Image (cartoon, rainbow, N blue to C red; front, side):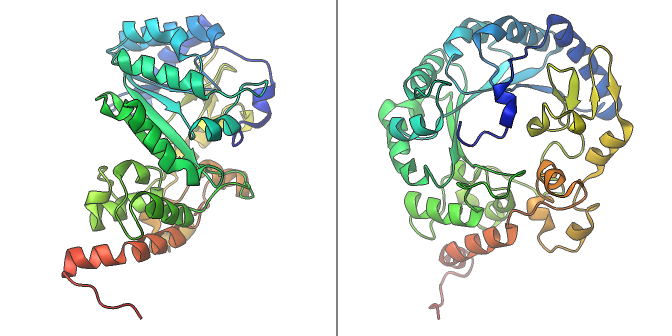
Amino acid sequence: CVYCFEGDLTAKPMRIMTPEQVDQAFRSIDTIREEFHPAGSAHIILFGGEPLLRPAYACVSRILDKAAEHGYEAEVVTNGVQTDEFMDLFEAHRGVINQIQITLDGTREVHDKRRVHRGGAGTFDEIALNIERLLENRLPVTVRINVDKENIESLPRLMELIEDRGWNLYPNFSCYMFPVTAHADVEKANTLEEDKLLYALQRMLQGEGGALPSFALYGFKVLGHVASVLAPDSISLKMPPLFTYCEANGLRYFAFGPDGNIYPCGQAIGQPDMAIGKFYPDLELREQKCKDWATRSVLTIPQCRECPIATLCGGGCAYGAYKQTGSLMTPNCQNCGGTLNAYVEHMRDAILRKYDGFVEPRG
């Protein structure tokens, strides 16, 4: 896809975990849980690259079997092109699969410019058909829409398409938007700052100053807590203040790659210098790297300790901070202040009516 963060990894030969690696990964998960999170539960995510490719069928089957044995739920993050090839596995593991996330970036015209086959052909029709197959088979589908400058104006038409096809009528369907991010490349051409993206979404979906539908705010890290307090009708998730940005901080995310390494973040996979250890042939964790990821928070990053809105962004993306500065202990702010100011300004009238019952004239 045009905004892929995996770089030259997509040009290299495809690697698939061996049966021995899958078995060792689950043994390693048991050890890691006992050492780091003895009271926590584990959740498996099938991620890539693209996990649902025909050559990976046996590997995916083994992972789901192992997840079932351990009592773990599993989520699948896929482009949706070959999902139908795995339908029998999903049906056999209904008790394991709790979400199949599929990316759809717009109507056919828009999506087929962004997410294509290696030869350049579009993927919209295949994905839409597979979404319908999954919904009809009562499997949980979540459509993710990655939003940037190229497709934002087409979103109302995509919402109409979803309604026209009746996907929103299925109880096993959900949908959310997420800003295309460039944590490691601040010059990425088509990304939108969150405040500009927020304003555009408000204007298109609810009118200027109006509350957004809950799915639209899902990807706005800095706004989740503020919105849930000031305008609870605009967001269904009740988000607490953030002391960390995501599950990679606190060492709550362990990505097992077919290279035998363990990574602290999905975006770091395939970059051995960012590995926090290895699981194959034997489990070995790098103590200092694990400690660095485990302790990163707004309480340990010096600049964050002095920032009045630190608990709204959680210090920003650790991976982005490391790629930009070479250190985890620096913030990755992504214009959080601008995002917050834009939200409060656009919601000003609605907030004042809710809490004061009147609005003073502007100016």
